[in-house]
Image (cartoon, rainbow, N blue to C red; front, side, top):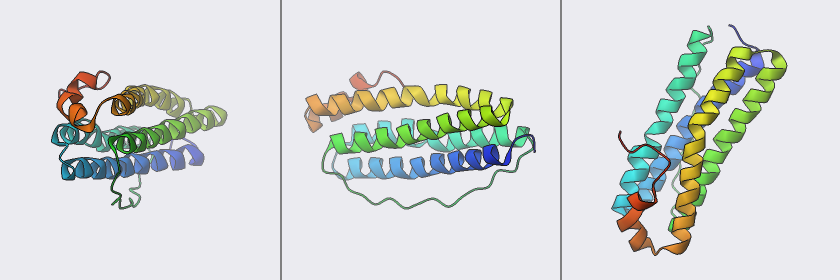
Length: 166
C-alpha cells in the first residue's frame, strides 16, 4: 500500500460519505416527487444523486492504483420528509459541504504524512465537488425567492454549475 494508514482510512471514509450522500439525495428526490415537484426531482436525482456513486468509484479506483484495497462501509437509511424546498436544498448543501470538509482534512493529513499522490488526488477531487456546492447554494437562494411551483417549472433556469448531459 503506497499510502499511510490514516490516508487509507480517510479515503475509505470519503467513499462511504459518497454512498451516504447518494442515499440522502435519493431520499430528497423521492420527497420532491411525492410533493409533486417532478422537474426538480428529476434534476436532483439524475444529476446529483446519480453522481455520488461515480465519485465513490473515482476514489476507489485511485486507491487500487495506489495498491490499497477499498472497503465498502455500511450506509444509513434516510426517510426524512421536508417542510419546504429550502430545507431540501439546505440538506443537500450541508451534505456536500461535509464531503468538502472531509476532503480538506484528507489533503492536510496526506500532506503531513508525505502521501503526495493522495494529497494531489484529494486536491483534484475537491475541484470536482466545488461546482456541486455552488449549485446547491444557487438552489437554496432560488428556493428563498421563488414559490415552490415556480421553481419546479423553472429549475433549469437556476441550474448553472453542474453538467446536465448525463
